[in-house]
Length: 494
Image (cartoon, rainbow, N blue to C red; front, side, top):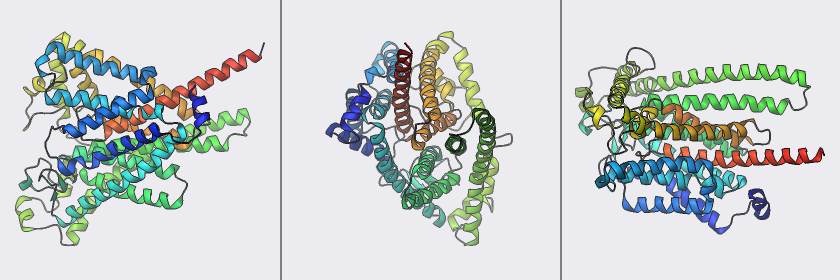
């Protein structure tokens, strides 16, 4: 039926599709404007909330998401979270933190996820082409502002005096000296936005045919990659590096598919083994190289500033005890040594201990309302932890094994559809690269919570569900088409 509909309208846009695409595109771009005006740690402006709820409702109706297995699976998690609060802490149901998480989850699984079912494959391509250019242009501007502020040692604040572009000094009251911010309150959020943006630039660069646009994407990637290195957000660096490695792997397989179409079966099998071996080796090499270069960027940047006599100001000289602060930061925040986890191991240990105290916590979880209150009691940190620094533990703490099994089911369903797309010989390269985005975010979530529903300012969550929505919609169509072809072939044998 979906195929018939696409054949009837071709690649033309009808009114509802166009309105939806513009609406979603503007809401996604708004993630780069939030930090310009807002500076509260937890805040969900009413106007923005209304627009996101509207987008979710429109997405569910236009996309007929009640027919989508992936949506039904993840929507069960939202219902479970709401029921959990209603039964345990009904007086807190409309509190800011609870409503933020539930509404943010609805926006992601409704408004963002629906794109794959509302738009045809060609329309998705056209939407992504325009959106990625706009997103990367805005992100490049943000990065250049932050890099200029870092180079001149003059941090720039937003309109409310909260968020910062550049490298904050201790007088700004920040916990993150010598780490670049691009308007968010922390380098972690900055790194998350930059990691996703860098992968978008890489995917667009490789799938774009026009030379001029490819050059612009290349420039955007370089700017974003330099800014990411200066944040020293290791989880985000790892996330982008894993994404780049996966892109390398897919590219080698794609080249092999194009060259091996006319090969004999025996030769084809031999080439397949060699291709996969080469793809794995290149993937590991790109992963290591990407991490190494990103960790070198802060040191090179600091040395360049010192040579230009721009790194030392009177205020900075009083606050800094080292002649090379970048080296000091990198040495204490690398990917090796005893401090590789920078306290995450203690957080994980205390969360696990807290869960083990009562069996019902493991099965059902605490709830989404301040779940870290209990584990924070026994932690020795200067400030309380806002999350578990591990998405698996976060889901277990909030929703127990019930929530973890729901997420696991959604992940399996999406992975299966992604595999169909990647292995399909008819899927274009741009479509095969889309699974890289959720894969890299999920790898980062092993040490952070980029996809956390409560984090309404970071772009990782909406992009995660945009990608999953496209994967599941296209993947399910591929499965239906294969099933129909098999039925047709089977009927012709009689």
